[in-house]
Image (cartoon, rainbow, N blue to C red; front, side, top):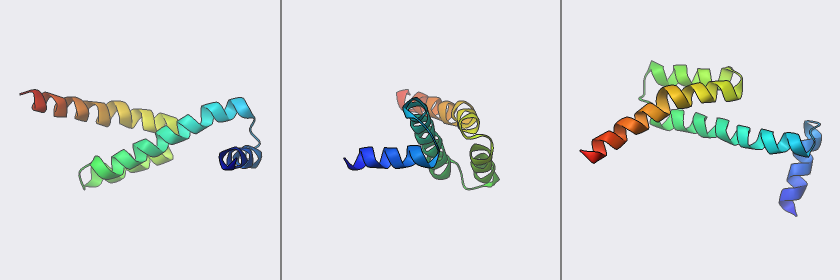
Length: 85
């Protein structure tokens, strides 16, 4: 009940119908996940600030995809290689 009411409120706020919400909500969740990952896993330096600005300011799914492929996946592959040794 509460979730349905919230989704209807979001849909009416942005004038969206059901199909757009099915696409928009996962993209928004992915964008927030990449912002959180960048804020917590990047070293405290100018790189963190730069990547956060890129993820936030580049239209949201493009910046998040850039961060995913340029930073997160390579970092995970390196960590996986260290664990296997």
